[in-house]
Length: 424
Image (cartoon, rainbow, N blue to C red; front, side, top):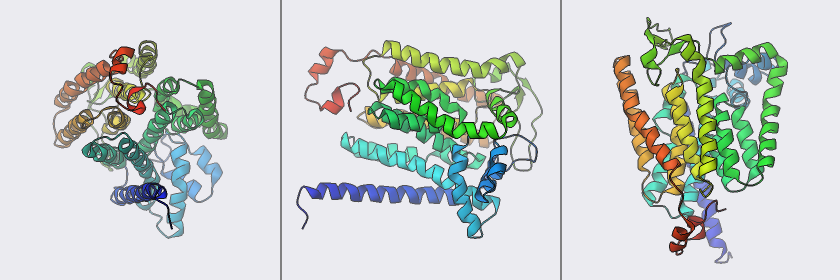
């Protein structure tokens, strides 16, 4: 007969199991309803972020073909999705759509696992029931989730979940785990390098161990691809870091561009409506890196008394700035910003996640207008009208002065978890 003290443990285990089942069911539902991603199947001989060929090769056990068929993305999501594709092939579901849906499942489930963790953590912190529902729900599924699936990039969800998880692990003094998660994220999508500084800063202790673990993990997952075909590897990563001269409406560069004819492919994808001067195109991605690492360095120098969870807000700001500065920003580029913001509000604010909800609504409204046929100039003005002020609000919140020790003592009635900076 179980003792009384075992009952809460069993109850927590039952809740965790139920939440995991819900996360798995939601991931399956989203995956089975996903259309074939626009970028999933590429054209022969064209280097792009197309995952179909390497995933199918690995699912068939053709390792060399997998290694030399490198898309612009990293290897992690390909390695994770290939076993699911292999199961599909074994069961006779070998179409590109079937394999795409099966491969999207683990990426969606990664976001679901993060949502489950946040729900449990928020319950421990006694957040309001509405917040405990909204934050995990917006992490597991939001308008950008379906947009990432539509464009063929479920790996965005995986990379984001890994980055946010690395920040959370670093803040809870799990340096080795944080390093492995960070290295895996970098080997999933190149933009994850923007999470390096926030994760290392959030760790506060054992930063050397974290950095070594991250570097070793990333090397283990990246070097084999580079050795298999160094020319293609360098070309792919150079293509991911350089803008060819086109510009989308959702960034600060659009006003400097020149109108060009828009071409629609058979899959429904369209070319950017403007071209960007080569000088501006060349500096855009270096500016993203400079702002990302610069904001992190400034935060580290000025916010030494901040709590670890505030690194989530720093990462959200960096990723929103990345969207503002990237000439080719698509809607799903905002996934890391939105999920990091949701995690921060869930763990650091007692009330409803107003910023996350407002950001979600603004992004959804912008996507709806873009789909309605609004002009590119009007879309650019609408986007900047909310994205620039929002970046300003996040900047104020990120760099606001930390509470003084005297102020912390005045709230002595709160729990250690709620008061002390960088609490475990």
